[in-house]
Length: 346
Image 1 (cartoon, rainbow, N blue to C red):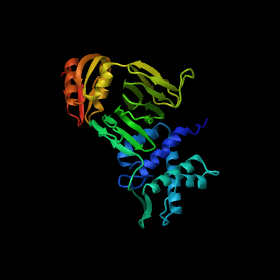
Image 2 (tube, rainbow, N blue to C red):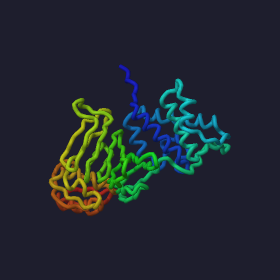
Image 3 (tube, helix red, strand yellow):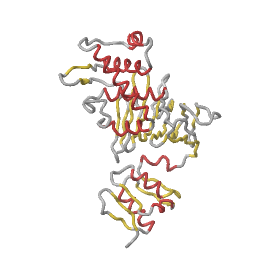
Image 4 (cartoon, rainbow, N blue to C red):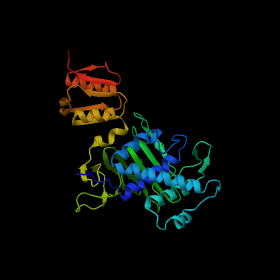
């Protein structure tokens, strides 16, 4: 019995083109866009995206190869190509990925990105980017103000791509969690994307999480959620979501959508102190570990099933370890680097 070849969806093809556009527009960070283990600040997010489907890597490399080939064709001409011209020239009998590559090149050239020969290898000279990346390190929480007046709170280890111009207001959460306080703007909605899901807001605020799955939590005002696909045909792909309800699904080709009741603690990540109301200790540890290079480890994993009721500064790994050690009557073993092992008293 032979393995079936991996397939790729149209949405994944678009994501592959997005990744190629982002990586190739940052030659200082990524000199070689085909070196998949040397993608700099994009490495973690790209690897997580590619790991979900082996066909994604091939699609990404196809776009990069075609963009480079087109760049070679126009090398030395230094002329700006419009998107319409590229479509007329390349649309006939071309595969979708080939067309995506040509569009990427047009955007790069139109933005002042010229492919130049250095005598040893080609490089991109970037003067602007279509989408601005905003990224936080592990343990960092930062607030950014976007060009339209929208404020964004970025949680730990988050990557957000921002494209706000005369054509629209659009952001894409590649990984992590963010809170959007949307500036109302007549005639132009605010769009956020994560794993193919689109959230449309006219104002108000909402939390968006993209990690092992996607969670959408409206805080103030109604939002519209457009899903790429659903496991249950009885579920609508477009839904209106009001504060008090969270829409969640795990990663997968056809995710099962769940509507959950929102708890006050779901919004407390912005302050750092969270109220855990009979929550499994394993969940507390997982959240605390996301804010630190040092990790808490239970010597007896079964203890993670016990539930805890407490207010904890989730961003302070030492305090979390101490609180759990007291609650479980354990001691902290610091013998291993970047490990706080909770073990029984000797």
